[in-house]
Length: 140
Image (tube, rainbow, N blue to C red):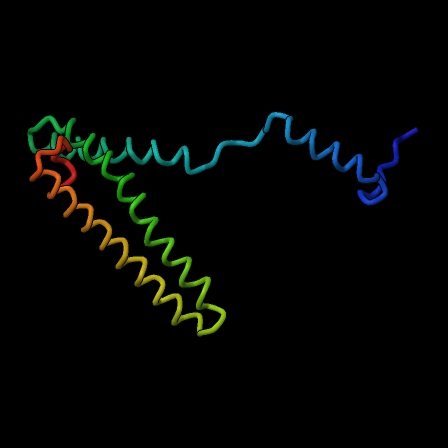
């Protein structure tokens, strides 16, 4: 005889708690986040592209490739600050104003804040370089 599955509300609160607890301690079978696989692939592609450009000029290019691959995640991390501003502007102002106006302003603020943060990083790096910091010259 086949077991009849009852709706959740007929099973009782104890069974619901047991199932929630069981799901917490069971190891997850989910796949890793897709962004985790994209970042190393992008870094490898950037490094090989820069290395090929230098080799066409007759230089080694290994160090330049590594430096370019290291700069890319920094730029991505800094641009997330601008993305945060985009999200806040859309979240707070979209219900009160026209969509095209808010999306245009939010995109402009994303761009402006990302560029401002990148420029600020350069200014901070130069100030540390003057003080004698040990940061590599590849950040310029």
